[in-house]
Image (cartoon, rainbow, N blue to C red; front, side, top):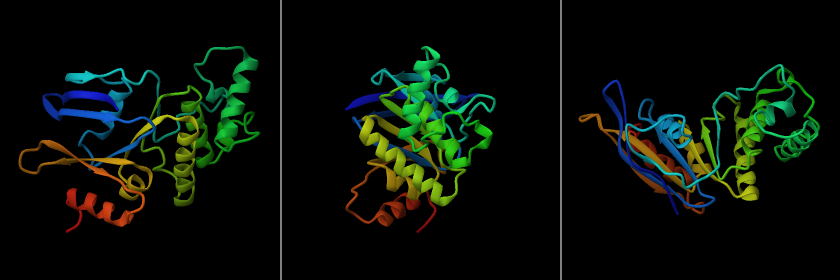
Length: 230
């Protein structure tokens, strides 16, 4: 078990978004953070990626290699698919091409390496973004609502792909989503951020997901915590 965040707090313009929040992660664990808009989900993810710093507390360097995938693929349209995958990596053109080709095969895009981004579907572009993240061989994959813009069937394909690749490549995953059913389907553990309507403080509650139990029960518990059902 690795501790990732130690008693962190985060303020914007004097408004405290997160207070005294700590987080741990087991090897190969899939943890999802769920909550209403504005409770600090994406802020947590950005701090884990070291794109933001906490106001107080510490982001621990337990995971040496981290990669992040955003809701939008953020691909460069004038580069070929393989060039997008290896953007920022060092090596000869031949080496980078082979690395990209191997990872594109892993995400189900065999023989797509020479395609330009504008010729790809939304699901294919998401696979390229996933390949770009995983080609760096991260210990920790961070997902910021990466499938939100996809249709239902493509979204399910991407969810299963991430689970398969996690098993193959042995990385841990932290994801942010608004989709409760997605959280239950993918996760070993779910962190629910709940803002107290009286104090405005955000508290975190956790669910351990037993895949042998009814997913609907977990979803109903989360919705109840969020005040979205009785």
